[in-house]
Length: 374
Image 1 (cartoon, rainbow, N blue to C red):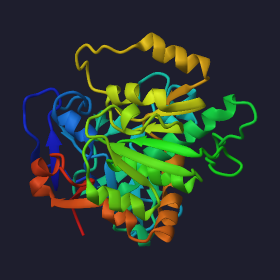
Image 2: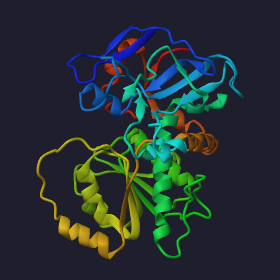
Image 3: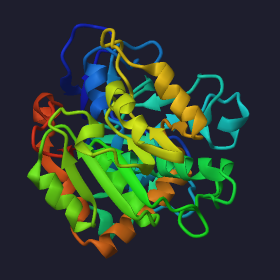
């Protein structure tokens, strides 16, 4: 079967090649891949900054944002049938720590986890894969065309929950529960939210926070993109381009209860933190690259303001199954409230043969997906 493979740590381009057909063991499912999303992590792997092949191999099947259809059930797997639409989770636990044993590998304490399509385990950019049912999340047929967005949506589901739950530290503020996932009443509802970045994570994060009951939500990015402005306006979300100017000037010193970072730019974070209101929180989702050189930042003044006014920074990475399941609920609700909005996030669909082109950033688009099967 065909697959897109990369060679982490080696100066080799991605290749569309033949790999062995997967054969499910008893209790496993074989899944036909329909489409796979492309994201910044894929670009980082291709640039040599991240990623590792499975042990004993030199190549890695790329792709961690999957959407597919069950093709075969080997042996007995309760509740699963050929034809079911599924998305696979990404991280597999270390098998040693308490968090991984409790199906919360996103909080792994040993670092011994693997991640499909990223770290030590082949991904989904192939015509088929096999998987255990516990790592598959069922997607309703009505989400067939947008289900590939579930993995990035799960990331912002976790980010929103972590940010909202962190406010338990503030007296008198009800908070979102950590387990099971809850947001909105009786959870804390921020009145004003600033989202840094209007890529897939930023837009999905803005939508999730809007669903959670946030009042005003504003997404900002450097360059004006009218299509994104129109897309966000559909859900009552504001949009502003900074033109490279300081956020404090662009937003005239406005204050926000929650800042969601989705840029991977440390400078954006530094610029945004003074806009946090007292007792508020900033959640970081971006993966920051290596040092971009020295910057002159008045850290003492910034951190003193953070301390004196009880401002908090939380971080989040990856997501466990519960956030994928929550993401399915959110997708259904987004489709109900703003029909067709999720489909507008997918602005480019490419065949496997054009993967090298698909991985290049799309200047005026939002999300690129690779079409694998039908």
